[in-house]
Length: 427
Image 1 (cartoon, rainbow, N blue to C red):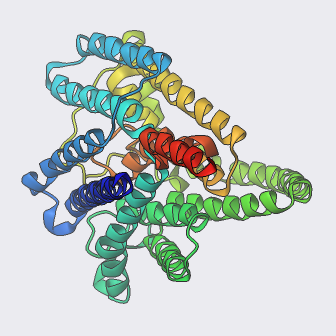
Image 2: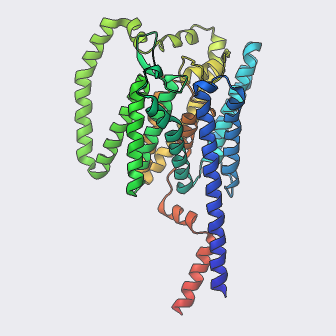
Image 3: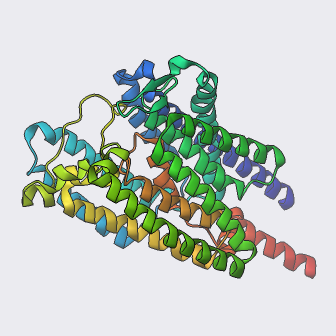
């Protein structure tokens, strides 16, 4: 009788677990849908869809929070969040009235993503995290890659930029945003390749990877293409390192030494020929975006002067993720954010060091790739950008040890029952 009750209890728990996973997948699809669609040409100025990005994120957080039995927090992280709030509120008194609304929204979004990362994203099981990644990949495939590949042969889907670059936009309003979605699909595919075992899944991931790289190439987005190539190189090195550590370390050392010997003189000659203006033009004016930041008075530099953005998120703001923080919250705010992210990275590194695996090392490498990416593109602190949301999800993940995995898969009550049954059988 007790065995039957245990079986029924186990079945009901598994059904509840499946239902929860379905809701999480649905919430992830909604989030991906409403963070991709506003960047379509058709919906550039469609305000309701723009607002749905934030509502879908709130729904996503509520769904994840409802599945957690308890909320754990790190005192260091919350102290740093407290500093972000305090200095953010001080910054509000320094900004112009016209910029106070956008600065308030930015501060609110920042607090939301920081608290969500620490309380909600951290501690997600591997199964839940992987389901989220699959949902994002399928959404990118359906909403980004398939339409882009279908239009890649149409001349009307391309334009010539002011720099004379031939760029693909397809159904998107901006080439860089299209490339960002494809880069996200590529990096997630690389991460999932170290987990997936079924052939059909592996084939799908390689198709997504190849299609993403092709679309990035035709968008002519230098930053995304560079990060994509780096991501694939890192993936190869990780696989080599786990198979033969000594050989790989020697190989990396020789490659790095060769690059230093050959690239540094070449870069010096290249800079001498082009000068600052040429390099700035090559980077689409991104070096110029630092000038207004450091030409401000001391108070604005340290506390932030705020900024007014015209239009919705699909409009280009030619600054990087770090300058965005400085514009809104100043150098002090940027320092607080750097400490918060650094604290999370250190904890992730410690966990990876204790329990190294292909997927955990790949996840850590993606964090560093995105940190480099945000030197060229904006959206580091954002809940309306799918790449940024993934960055914070990945940053919050810490691979569990074997004992922790067993505890998560088998409830404590079941463990006690197994022990009792074992004792009875032994007698």
